[in-house]
Image 1 (cartoon, one colour):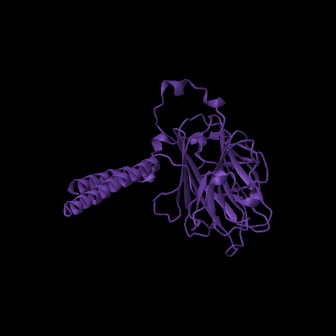
Image 2: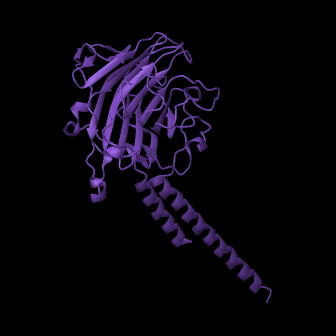
Image 3: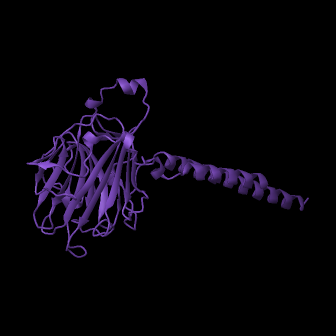
Length: 336
């Protein structure tokens, strides 16, 4: 038993070291890796329908000295902003600083804001003012529940990867196509809110900071995600019968310095089809009863944790079995 205790202590230390926060992996905003051609920052220099030669905007989007307002707090508005330069980075991280606010009370506001990395830009449609059958990645910050289900708290952040074969179902809040998500109280905060989207080595990680404490909290962590290079970054928002101000303060893209194998380097990344290798279909995901986190495929440390728990279970069963067997042997000797 003493040896088992030592083994358990060692395993727990190893487990603790393996569970370091994902936020420590995120870039600290080092300006050395900031890609200005894909970043939007103050002061904005809007001329006509463009923010310099690197950004276009559409619809109700309004450029001010402090923010880019995709929609005002008015009904039936749509707006978007798109980077005109295609991104050819294999590994990147986007920091989105934004603010969603309005006069509507609880459950009387909408619809939300979306971040895009897609093949096409300025393609108007019904999904937060963008095309429903897009090619690429979308991260939705949905502030209004269109579904009657009550097992999820809104505002709700979710992610979707699409190759144009699936249409985002706005009436179901994208449940059948989402890869994962979390609830986040981003609306009507006194400060700005932040979203970090990292794509590296076929892994998509989404982190949020809604308390303005410079502390990232994990929202989505998905492996097996394949995205091509040469797509465009953008953000869009929409209002319906209910409304909000949807403001972009900044979008900062950072290059991640990651080594790739010779095979990966020789691959034509522009020909990659957007896809996700899931252990189970997104529609089979089951919501947490609290509505705070949607189950995601087991990747990285989650697999390690599962294997370690299984190993500990086997060891405990073996020790208990040995003790029981020994006691039976001693009991049997008394009868001889």
